[in-house]
Amino acid sequence: MPNTPSLGLRDRKRLETRLRIETAAVEIVTAEGLDGATIDMISERAEISPRTFFNYFDSKEDAILGIHEVGEVERAIAAGISASESDDVVTAIVSTMLEIVGPVAARAQLKAQRMLLIKDNPRLLSRQIHQFTQLNSTMSAAVVEFLTQREAALPRDPEHVAEIAVATCIASVRIAVKEWVANGATADIDTMYLRAIGLTRETLKALQ
Image (cartoon, rainbow, N blue to C red; front, side, top):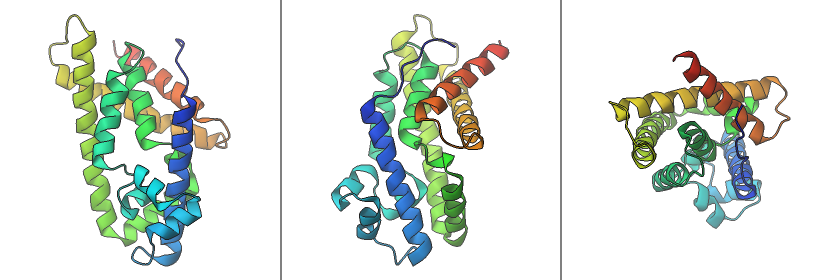
């Protein structure tokens, strides 16, 4: 595998804080119900201030689902893709995806609790589907811009190439997370990061 930069300390801390907030949100809502839970309660459990909560999430519903505020998602994607130190689009996509999605899916118990909450609260499912669709379209548009800035000769259909690249990276991230869980979830986040990049490259190479 080619040398790939690890996540920076700032990115690690943000991912860790996001995970604490998401965990607290799911635990509080499981105990108190969606209507009974408050942002103050979630913040106290996560050992942060309500002001810090809103630096990560727009609402308690978004914290339960692990969803960023829309503007933050767009800024994170634009910054992560366009400011990538590498000309490798795979590295740019995977590192940006992990910044946005975070490691929460790697916690099997938390994921199971989240699914139960979605089952009992249909409005959470609607919100999750909407956000996932928006994430894909926003990421694909950013990748087209990435290719435009870095490639001397663009592919014939850059929009289609971008959609395929994003879908492949997302699938690789999911697989890397599942393997991380199967191995006891003891390795650091960089393990998932490097594995997802490796899987994507292997897949694209096999399809050539």
